[in-house]
Amino acid sequence: MRHPSPSVAEEVLARPTAFAVRDHGVVVAQVMPAWRWTVSVDGSLLDGTFQTQAEAWEAGVREAERLDQARAP
Image 1 (tube, rainbow, N blue to C red):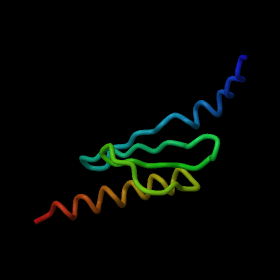
Image 2 (image 1 turned 60 degrees about the vertical axis):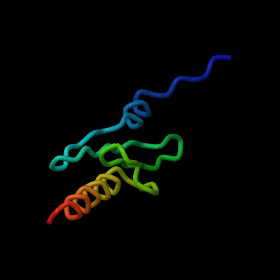
Image 3 (image 1 turned 30 degrees about the vertical axis):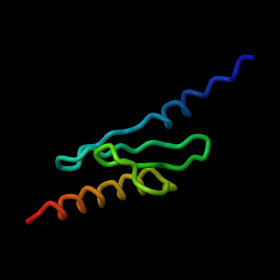
Image 4 (image 1 turned 90 degrees about the vertical axis):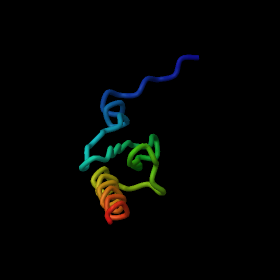
């Protein structure tokens, strides 16, 4: 049985997007078919999902800042 292939738009949305936040790697990806977003920082997935890519990215930036503050003397 052949499964229908996703549309080009769905494929693009499902691809993770990587950002550099200072020396941290932040990766935002969409969870299909729930249409929710996840975020990981330095390879660790944060708890929960987000309604928008912007919310997920913002959570990743906040986590990167928290990690930097935890390292500071």
